Length: 338
Image (cartoon, rainbow, N blue to C red; front, side):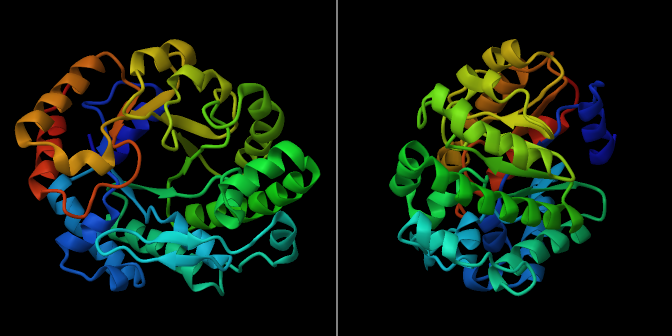
C-alpha cells in the first residue's frame, strides 16, 4: 500500500497493511537540513527542504506543517521570545484586556507575514510530498487563541465572570480559526490538528466546558471545509473523551502519553481514529533499546486496532533528537502487519 491508500483504509475503517505513522519534526528538519532556525521559520521553501530531510530518515505517512502557534499570536501583535534550538514562544500577549482585543482588527491572511509563512509553508510541504504523503496543519483552537491574546488568567476570568465579552472574543477567534484553517486546507493540507485545553476538565470543570467552550468548538469545527484532529493539548483526555465525541468534522483524537488507548476506545467505539502516544519533547531521551521496546509494546497493544495511527503526543520532537531515533520508528512500522 502507498501512504495515501493506507490512510484511506484507516479513514474508511478497512484494514491497512500496517499502522500509518508520522512525527512532528518541525525544528528537527532545520537541523537535518543544516539550516538556521531564523531562516527556516521565515522561508517556506527552507521549511519544505527540512521536511524532505525528515522524509529521508523517517519515511512517514504523515507530514506536519509548522507547529508554531506563537506565529498566530504574533499576527495579532504579540512579542516573541526566540529560542536557540526550537520554535519561538509568546513573550507577551498583544492585548491587556478583552476590550482591547475586541477593538483591534483581525490580521489579514494575505498581508501578515507570520500567517503568510504558515500558509505558504503548508503549501510548500504539500508540493514536496507530491501526493505520496498527507500533510496535517496544526492550528490554535478558537477556545485557546484568546489565552494567547490576553493571557491565560484573563481569558479564564472572562469565561467565568464576563460571559458576554468572552462570547464576543470567541466569535472573533472563531472567524480567524475558520479563515486560517480553510487556507491551510486550500494550500494542500489534508487535515488540521488543534490542541484543545479550555474544554478539558483539568482546566475548566465539565459543566462549564459544556456550557461555555464546547459550543464554540461545535460551531467552529462545523464551519471547516475539512477534517480536524482533536489534540490532547498537554492534558490527559481519555477519561473525558466522551465530551468531545460528537463534535463535527473531528477525524480522530490524538491522546497524551498518559492516556490509555483501551480506555479511550471503550468510550468512542471502533469507528473513531485514535492517534499517539510517545511524548515528542522527550523523544531525544530514549536510548535506541528503550525506544525499540516502547514501540514494540505500543504496536502489540494496538495489534487489533485498525483505526490507530502512531504519532508523537504533546509538542514537536527536539531539534537535537538523534536521527537514529527516526530510523528506529521507520523500521518498527515498516516491518509490516499488525
